[in-house]
Length: 221
Length: 231
Ligand SMILES: [Cu+2]
Image (cartoon, rainbow over all chains, first blue to last red):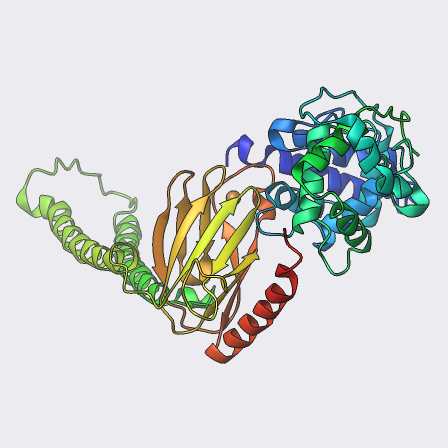
C-alpha cells in the first residue's frame, strides 16, 4: 500500500473520524465552517483550494455560491438525482465525491465553507452575441433575477460570475436530459423546460455571453 | 473451498476454485510434512548431557538424499500445479466461447457504464439498455464483455466470478463469463484510479431469464417514454 494509494482518502476518512469523535453533536443548522473546511480538502482536488474551479477537469468555480444551492446540489448528487446519467462524465465523477460526505451536517458544513470562499473572475472561453443573449435571458431572469444574482425563494442560483464554459455545459445537459431528468428533481425539471427554450447551440452561446456581462454580487446569500 | 468465504457464481469461478483447492492441499500437505520434520528433528536432536554435537558436511549420499528426494517431489508437484494452471488459464482467459450475448463495460473516474444488448440480444441496436453502476445478466448464459476506459487504468473486478481484468485507455479488451447462480453481488474497481477509486462500486444482478426479461421490459418502457424529449 503506497502512501499515494490511501493519502487523500485516508485524510478525508480521518477528517470524518475526527469530526465524529470531536463530539460536536449539536447539528450544525447553518453549516459548521470548520467541519466544512475539513471535508473541503477532498473537493479541493478538482475545484481548487479556493474553489476557483478547473476547466481542464470540468470542475466549475464554486467559491461564493449560495450555501442553500451548494447544499441542494450535493444532496441531489448523494441521492442519485444528479450525476447518474450514462455519458454525463463529470456528473458521474461528482456523485461518488458527494457520497463521501456522510451526514447532512457534513453537507451543510461544506456548503457553508464553499459560500465563504471569495469568488474569482473567469476569462471568456466561448463566444456569443451578448446583445441577442439579453433577449433570450428574459425567461431566465424570472428565477435567476434580472441581474443574474439569483433568488433563493425561487431556488434560482446566482449565474453572474460563473465560468461561461460551465454554464454552456450545464445548459447542454439540461437540454439532453443528462441533468434535471430525474423524477424527483423538481427544480431540474423546471430548468429542463427553460433550457428547451434555447433552441440551438447559438442561442445557448448568446445567453451565456450575456450572463458573462453581469456583475456578481460578491458572496451570495 | 473459497466458497466458504465468497460464493462462486460463474463457470470460471468453479475452475479457479478447483485450482485454488489443488494448490492449497498440495502446498499445505508438504508444508505440514516439512514443519513436522523440522520440529521432530528439533526434539530428537535437542541438547542432552554427555552428547556432543556433530559437524555434518552433507557430502555423503545418505545425507544428500534429505535434500534431493524432497526436491524431486517438489518438482513433480510443480508439474501437476502448472499443468492445472495452464488448463484453467486457457479456459478462463484464452478461449472465449461463442457468446449468447455481448455487453459493453465502460470504466471512468468514478463510475461504470454498462451497455446491455436489450431484448434483441444484439448490441448497437435501438433497444440497447445503458445503465450506470448496475449490470444485469441472465443466469446460465454465456456473455462476452468488451471492456474499455474513458480516462485512466481501472480494473473490472467481480469477486463472485473470480474475474479481474484491467481496463486500459485506448484499448477494448474482450473477456467472457457464464453466470451460474442468481443473486445480487458486488462489482469493484481493483486498480487505483484516483480520488474516488473507493467510491466506484457497482452492483451485479444475476437473474433468471424471466426476471431479466421483466427488468428489460421496465427499462425499455422508460426509454421509450423519455426518448422523445431528448434532443
Ligand atoms: Cu477505477
